[in-house]
Length: 379
Image 1 (cartoon, one colour):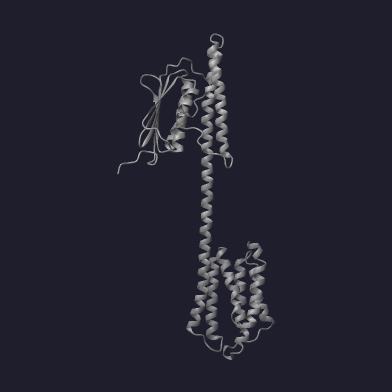
Image 2 (spheres, one colour):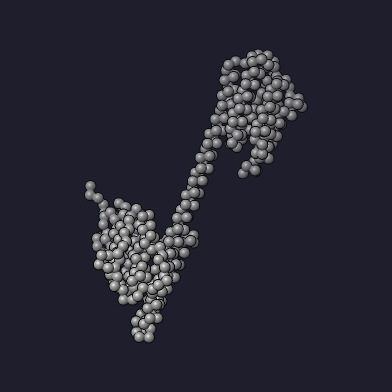
């Protein structure tokens, strides 16, 4: 926009200053007391200096400021007609302030004011009044004030855009982290389940082929589930993709059935829709806990207790540690418990995990519910 205006604005200002000055001198020359003289070729040249400086204001704003005020002062010293010649100083003052050269703009305006006071006091036939000096000061101050206001407004808008861009980048980073965590949980659970079931199938294939068939069926379903969940998570990368929850507390029964473990799910309290973050976190904590059981105590009996309270959701996962199969080595310790603890802490909750006194392992997560998700308080 500015690049299209740059070559046109100096031409417009030059035409206005020349032709309006011709009109101004027509009236001022008729009053001998003003002491004005007709425009000469030198006067026309001075009227065009300001517009030429305006054409260079983007590249050299301070130089344009100095040249314009100097040309205007010389024009006044030759006693040419007042009026349109002051259009160029207004533009270069605006440009200097907006381009960050505020000190130069204020100093140039102050120096020009002192020149006008000296000129109107000693260099014209009739000394100007205090009103004249006040009017000149008001003219310059108004120009500078409007320019400063426009500068501050533009800086505020730029800051808002910068903050909005930073917020967009932050949200994008958080979404990428969330998707990475979702992919980690999906892959860790299902790949661990496939590994354990494959190991079990290989171990009992010769002696118990029917049980091996069951393990292979579980592997088939787990591989299908991991592909489905991965497609769901990755679909969030596409614009306009549906953002429905890929996992939630309503799917715990399916999760328990697919885990390949003897899992009992117990729910107490009034079940109700949960905020998406809490709903997904509760599901992932149960999923990660079942993954840990499959890794370290395969075959153990697991109990999942879910308690809905007005102010929090409590999820407890316990296993008896009496696995019927040996734990598989080489699966790595992973980031299961720290990851679950981070999920809970991110939502303002807590998670405790450790061995049970009677054997086995226990994970307990407490996730706070916002007032809108809990029961209404009595008035």
